[in-house]
Structures are given as C-alpha cells and as structure tokens.
Image (cartoon, rainbow, N blue to C red; front, side, top):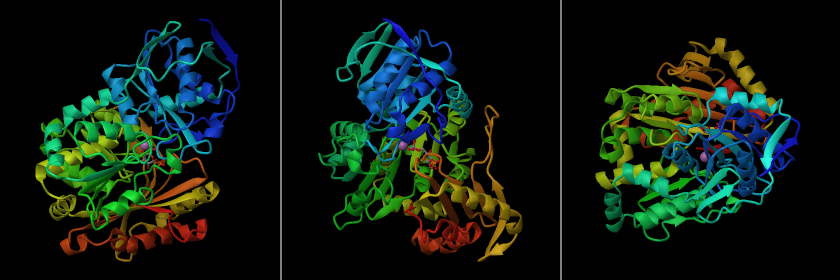
Length: 543
Ligand code: VG1
Ligand code: CO
C-alpha cells in the first residue's frame, strides 16, 4: 500500500487545555487540521513500529470521520496494530481500560466530554499514554510545539475501514481489530464489585434511574445495569447514544440533568439516581430527595471502601484536585492514609496512581475514579455506590447524613459564569491577585484570611512543577474561596468560583448549601468584583 506524504502548514492554537484539544467541529473540519495534530502527536511519539494504538470516541458528530483519518495515518506511520471500538465507540474510562489490558503503547480518545455535540457543537481529541493516563503536560507541550512547525503528514490511500463488524482487517501492514466497546470494561467492573449482591438488591425491589443523556454511557449502562445486574428495563433513561446527544448538554449536574433531578425529587421517586456525561467519565449521585456533592461522594466512597471487594485490602492513599472540598481529607486523616492535593485535570493523578500512592481520586466536577484505570469513571462510581447501598441497606440520605455527623460537613458549591468575555475574565483574575496583599490577615464577615496564593504543584513522583492553577483565599477556620478560569470551553471564558466552609452543627448541616455559604458568596463578589466586571447578576450554573 502506498504511503502518501501530504504537505501542510501549521495552524495556531492547537494547544491542549485541561483535557486535550477541544474546538468547534467546524474548526476540526478545516483542511488538514486534524491531520496536523495527529501527525504532530506521532512525530513526538517517535518510532511506533510494532506498537499497538487504541482508538475510540464518545460517538459524537465527526467521530467516525476522524477515526478513518487516524487509522489511515496510523498505517502510514508504522503502527502494527490498532484496537478500535465498534462503530468508533469507546467511553473515556473504557479506552483507558483497553489500553491497560492489551498493554497498548497508547490511545487516542475523540471527545469533547460534556460539551454539546452536532455540526455546530464541539469536538475534541486527546492522547493517553501506556498506563492509560491522559498525556502529562510535558507531552502535550511537546505536541503543541510540533504543531507549530509541522510541514507534512503521512497517510495511505485506501478505502474506509469497516467499523461495524467485530474482528480483524488488514490495512497494508497495519492490523485493525474492531473490538466490542463494553466487554473488557464490564469484566473489569465485575472484578471490583459484588455483582451477585447488587443483582439481589435489584430483585428485592430497589429502584434506580440512570440518565445516560443520549451519550456514550447508554450502551454501557444498558449492558451492565439492565442486562448483567437485572435492573428492570427503563432503569436507563436516554440510553440511545445520538450524534448530537439529542441536542442536549450531557453534563451530569443539577442544571443540565434536570429531568433526572425532577424524578428524584418527585413523590414517587426511585431510591437512587445517577447520570453520566458525554464520554462517560463523570457521574452525579442522587438519592430520594437528596443530592450528594461530588466532593462528599469521594469522601463517602473512601470511608466505605472496606465494604467493596476491589478495595477491601485498604486504600494506599487518596487524592483530590485543589478546588475539590476537603471532605476526603478528613476521611484520610481518620484512616491514617495520605491525601494528595493536585491541580485540576485527571492527568495530575496519573503519577500518584502509577506509584501506588493513591487508590481513589476525585474532582469536584463530578469526577471520581481509582487505580483500576487512569481516567475518572462515571459508571464505576455508580457501581461503587450501588455496592455500598446493597451492603449497608440504608438510603443515600441516611448514609450522607451519618457521614456528616461523624466527620462534619464540608459545605460546598461551585458557581460558574459561562461564556464571559476572555479579556474581562483575565482582567478579573489579575485584579483579584493584585488585591491579595491587602486581604491577608484581615477579617470579613467574621472570616479571617489566613493565606492567599496562586496554586502551584510539585508532582511528588517526577517533581515536575505546574504553576498558575487557581487563585486561593483560605480562611483561618478552614473555609476557602477559589477562582479559576476553565480550560475546556470553546466560547469565550468561563469563570469558576469554588466555595467551601465547614459545619459541625448537626442541625445546620442539613440546610441548603447556598444559604450556609451566603456570606462567602458575597465575599467572593466583593473580592473579585464579579457582577460589576462581568455584568452578570448571577452565575449561569450552580453545582
Ligand atoms: C473541567 C473540570 C475538571 C475536569 C475537566 C475535564 O475542567 O473542572 O475538573 O477534569 O473539565 O473533564 P475546566 O478546566 O473546564 O475547569 V471532562 O469530563 O471534560 O474530560
Ligand atoms: Co467527560
């Protein structure tokens, strides 16, 4: 088969954000745009002869077009084997699992996660290394540098590869194997959780709704929850993946998963509710008339890990991203295990997981995971909860409230201001940081400022340093205000304000977080001048 070398010119801005390169579909549709990025990646990887690559995506519009391009380029660049999900599908955690299981050299995941899909929506691409972990910053920076100087890419002239039928095809010297996207992942889940017990739990009348939001987890949830675990048909809602995710915004939170939230707060609510995002790595946990924040969920999983077969031997440590609440720190303290604080983005957990320093990890952005893969994992978190509920035979609300009684409640909320002007967002952050010296040790509404900084992180394993990871204002009672700009959006800027206080009064603990955080919400506006600078009266999304 003839290898073609095609001349091209660099595009600016092919820089990975928090989780890969995310742009509008129309940006990816520009001539050679995707090819440039993929060739830059292959150039940085060096000699790939004899190596195996995993390829799959969340099924959004442009997924299979991109996959055909990538397969042909993989053939021309000398890969020996590509494992690709049937119809181009692999959820992000399943891709990570497949990379690990087949000891692949790495994998390419096509997804823009929860960002809307379709012709006018977003698309994304990212590379994961042989451990299954998102590429570290060193690698993403090298790829970016390569995109700036790229002059040609290699591909082969061949018909499109058949992605619907399982099995092996030859593309020149490249062996393409179309694999079932669910099988390996489901087997991994079965090795971690007590499926028999969960099956009995459903048989005993326990009810749940899982909202796949017309995105990739539909096929995984149908197979695992309904077929394997025997949950009644209809347990999975919006379970058919669509190219445009049904026009929705598959972000599992109180705003975008409204239909599910309504059901869980209705008179005949099921016992348990959960949702996942576009690419299956996020999760939201709900009980009857009850919402568990992702930060609390991480803490509860850590505190109950002994009930779950895959984690019975104990946790080596836990890790959370800096803006995630400190609820898990309290559990770690009680268990006498270390708790690591990393910048936002799953790639920062990779080294801790590889080194066996952390077993469970989590982010406030509805991301939870463990050392079973190197991505956050939505269905895994749901199964973990199901396993705990089946063992403890208590409601979600009872488990949550008992947790708060024992550890205190880290009252938590995130306020997002989406789609604001990028220049204004930068100005807001600069002005806030300039104010830091005037805030230190001062008292506002009874909160005394203990420290202000711009978070930076030194990786305890490879000692790499990441700076500029978010502005923090910490108070003497442990409360925190954190300000960050999103690194995953494609429209203007998104300001994220993270609010946290600590409450030991059992009566107050059950009050609404927005009420308990009211003073801190006002202080955030006072310090950062949010309403004035952005012209927004309130956040666009509150989680
Ligand atoms: C957001 C979240 C972050 C998460 C990232 C990728 O990033 O805050 O915690 O790791 O999305 O998640 P940012 O930079 O927009 O705040 V996913 O499900 O989009 O892969
Ligand atoms: Co995601």
